[in-house]
Image 1 (cartoon, rainbow, N blue to C red):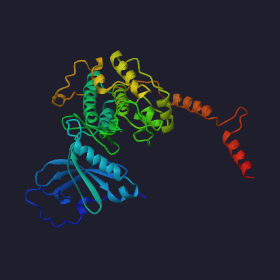
Image 2: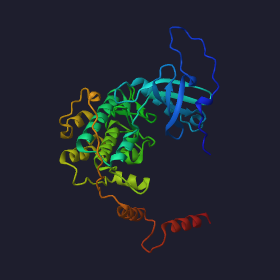
Image 3: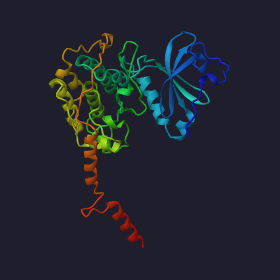
Image 4: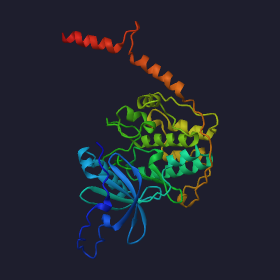
Length: 355
């Protein structure tokens, strides 16, 4: 059963507690006029909001307390708060306030007025080279700052890259991020087993093999995003999540002929199976794809005007999915050479053992 969305405006307005004059007053729901829903997740709702005293506009992420406790999501909430308190950068979403009431936790965030990069991409089909270079430079710059300050995002994808009023990027959604401490090695070669986090199309091969995420895992996702901006769809796609994972671990993708050599070179070097074979972000910045980019003051540049382009064909279609499904069935040996179902054979063997 779905958890009903709590309406913060319906909460009783508490008596304001007296605080020391030297401390800023903690915000509460009555400090904001809430507007439309900007987005929804499994345990959160993002609302537009206006601060009544100043007229400033924000996005307020409202997290359901009961769901967080029931689904053991407390760690995700604290990690997101800690990352946003630690990281201050033009290409990372800014956290202004946090507070809570009986029902919810609230993160008052910078408002990204133009939605996310995926929505923008859907409007135009794919990006021209110069536009892709502009946005990928901002993504690389923002993620490099995260890495330099001990944070691995672990779920980079176009939906988590928001666009400000001036159409510059704002990296968001740090619930699954990893904060490195002094005893943690941020190497490009994962060593520990870990549970899978992330999104299928942007997930690196090492995560599918139950390895810990590293800087190189974020670099892989950057390569997938770059490909998607230029082509109009992700490099690894199957008809279901399992088939997408098979494409990733077998490195089954193709670069359309229309993609220029500099772009193709960077994509190929990033999308390497072995994490240590991928370039670091400082190396990525030096690739020919980014020639002409002035890395200092990117946030002050005027964002490009995008024009509509048809997505490119990347060789992935329904027929390919059918062929891959047939290959997967053969590999799993669901049928033996006589045509008998492997599942039936396994079942009859188990039944025999139990008799």
